[in-house]
Amino acid sequence: MADNTDDAQPPAADESIASVVHGYWDPGPEPRLRVDDPGELIAALPALIEFVPERSLVVVVLRRPAAPGSNSTIGPVLRFDLGQDGGKRRLAAAIASAVAGICAAEESTEVLAVIIDDRVRQPRRTRTPGGAKAWGALIAAFAQHLAGDEATLKDAWAVPAIQARQRWWSLLDTDHQGTLPDPTTSMVTFTYVLNGRPIYRTRSQLTDMVAQDQDSAQEVAAHLEDAAGYDGYVAAIRRADPDGYRRRALERVLYRVADLDSGAVPTARQMAELAVVLRDRMVRDALLALAVGEHAAVAEQLWVTLVQSLPSRDRAQAAVLLAYSAYVRGEGSLAGIALGAALETDPSHSMAILLETALRSGMRPQELRRLAHHALRITDDLGIDLGPIQH
Image (cartoon, one colour):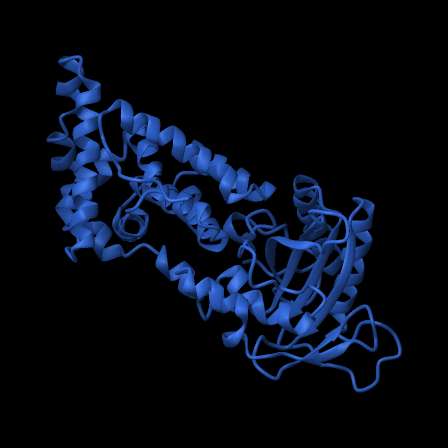
């Protein structure tokens, strides 16, 4: 990401101010995360955004209490890269604009903020709120811009790193400070891990997951022409049987999912065949249904493999499938990174643009499941049974 200097332009792609909705806290009735306990909240951030943030501003949007007398609940969680020193007012305005848009979508008026930066030091004596120097100024500017959009910064804290026994302190209340509990023993972390949600040590582990393997891409590219020649789409059109082609194409993908589930990694030739299959928009759209079915996890493994191995624009189709699969599970970080890969490969990709817009606006994963139900209607019409739906 570009440094946030006074002359820098607003960051773009996955690291943009827009594509940073990372997760939604929805654990069910227990455990409850108390937003009035800063140490517990800060320790839970790696679970909420899927990786341990560094040099970041994390903003937590608070949803209104469900009933009079009840507490606010955590909604979308956003992370912004602090980059280098400089350009705080420009950055604060951009962040406030993004946060205000999501607050409007959530009908929320309050947010919390956490600065995580190894460069901050708790002052020995604090006469005025702040203590993070330049980042304290950023928080003040952020609060000012946010107020202009009728939202309130309820509280803000700074911490050098999210580690056990690290000191945290408030940027708004000079007397409010404490020590972090062990993040690995957080009930939020426990809940996420129990539900199969990974928590990565660094963001780079996520970006590595969608990085293209040049050697694999070259191997697959060598088979693309033959795979396209044996595709059978033209023959199906001549027979006036496009549904027959799409049915066989979906079955081919499902075979690869089943093979991967049994431990067989697809060959370069097989991946080239899948690349050609995914060029058909209806087939690709139908495959969105896998994200809510019993084969969701292994299907996502296949999309990761294809994102790493497919060349050229074909890579965008797999990246979109990966992004959607991650999004509906509430893993906004992976979804945003996958969408960045898709749009880098194909800036005009309509589905990638649609999903990025949803991520920008903070659309809840549950709402996006509508696309999967539309996809299920496609598979039903083609006579393909994807098994039971996960709720």
